[in-house]
Length: 142
Ligand code: HEC
Image: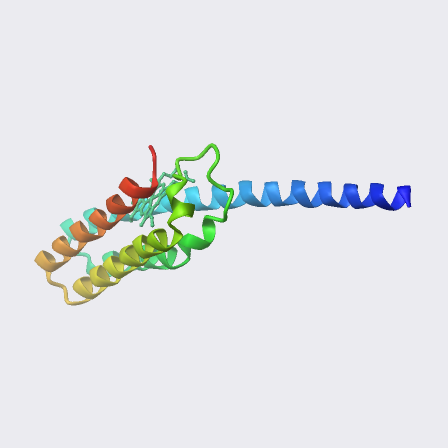
């Protein structure tokens, strides 16, 4: 009996440790994806100055794809020691809406780039940047 409860405790400990390292992994992954967002935004700005609409589409596709799965990278309990605000979990629906708005804005940029209208692409890029900022203002602390 005693042996049994000891091994149950050991199992619980192992589960706890492995979920902690799963959280560390998910934080690392989301940070890498946000850094890639920055790289894409910069690349889009550059591509636009060369009227390279294909490159704009390619980078905007990456942003759209990340926006689709972004909320999955914010499991409960993954805020500690990061710049993710507790508001993410007290208003997860709002956070998901902000990610959906970011996705929509990236899709709009893709459509604009496909139309090869530089002025429209410029406006869509601005709107996309605003959707990043809108989420950061509500859900990111620094
Ligand atoms: C739905 C909300 C949301 C959207 C949309 C969003 N972000 Fe963020 N972003 C966050 C949160 C929350 C963090 C903090 C993550 C953490 O510290 O774990 C973050 C962190 C970052 C970071 C810092 C990453 C690091 O290394 O710590 C960068 C850079 C960034 N975002 C860029 C962007 C860009 C560019 C866009 C738009 C293309 C964008 N984000 C869209 C919520 C969002």
